[in-house]
Length: 237
Ligand SMILES: [Zn+2]
Image 1 (cartoon, protein in one colour):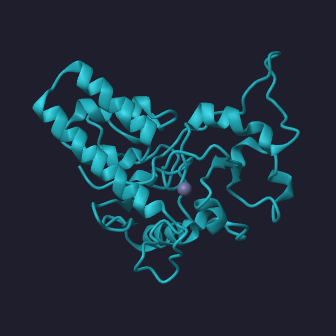
Image 2: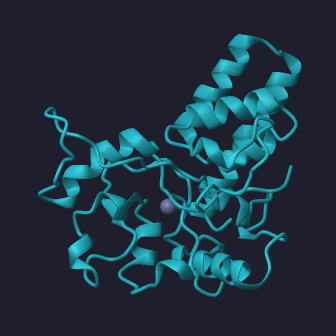
């Protein structure tokens, strides 16, 4: 099935106002709730559930691209770890993979007890883009990483989610009912880390289809009917 990480999302077109015209956001913060509504209450990079105090993330930083400050297609959501790590770094979009345009599930690998890394299947330019994306977001910073700071608890959250997902898998094996399946999906969406749930339930297509459907805003065209991650239409991977 392949290892996956960084949920690909579908942000969709600019939301419409009641008259049916695309909303022109006066301030980027005004887009936050619409964004959460579209792509779920999760960090677009590390997949953690967002904290209560969250801001809109600009893919291209607003300092360098003031014209994109209120542009819907430049918005994602980031937690208070990923956001400051990525910061105002001036970047070229094509040097990285993005969860709203590429099938980022194919770019990285999550494995239990290991830091996220570039997926084995990638080579050349794709490998470089995936590596740059890891560095930009600091997603692979665990205590052994040179740039790790103790404040960064993303790796702990990730491990906790693995633990809960594995426990859920054991519960399902002991008692495989529709109610149990629904309860596990509720646990998953409230805890976040889509990719970890997808991986732990690797052998269970039914559960994986539920995760794809129930994690708000997961790009459906990034997975085939058997939930294998596939090349994203219009994306580079
Ligand atoms: Zn994050």
